[in-house]
Length: 193
Image 1: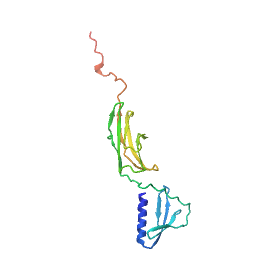
Image 2 (image 1 turned 135 degrees about the vertical axis):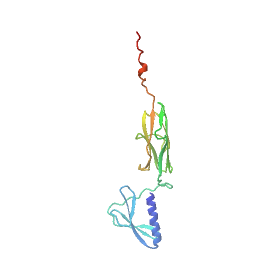
Image 3 (image 1 turned 90 degrees about the horizontal axis):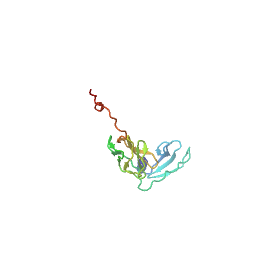
Image 4 (image 1 turned 135 degrees about the horizontal axis):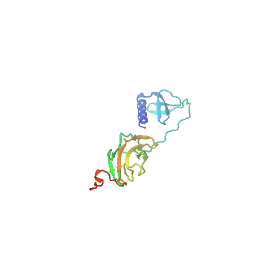
């Protein structure tokens, strides 16, 4: 989205500089649904003629069906580009003890979650159910062993925008097996004659 806005801004700036000049451009959507622009004809592209500071679409030869316009985003909805996403709690390698241990997972992103984006938490590759877009989760009833948590931010279409590095933590529970009595101190004393 940022690329399209930047490109459109550049095109408008160039057309304003041209002063009464006319320029032909071609536009099309690629396989990922992203609008592309070119100064050279491309198969399936629609020709646009730019006059001064306004663009007037001109019907040109097209080898494919017309591409429907992309749905407009609500006012104020900007495409957010994330610089970081991390799980900052628990600490890497932290160990939790007890059968009733609760692990508090805390995440942060830079910038904060944008409109239409979703924040998801996965533990051991499985989605954790909870409040949508929550930055904190409390995990209980985890099995003993090592666990890996990772966070993902998806856009409105379900495309991954950023993924955190995995955070590994351990849960240790008391054993249910009685300890075995072993060792030289536990042997019966020798019989004396």
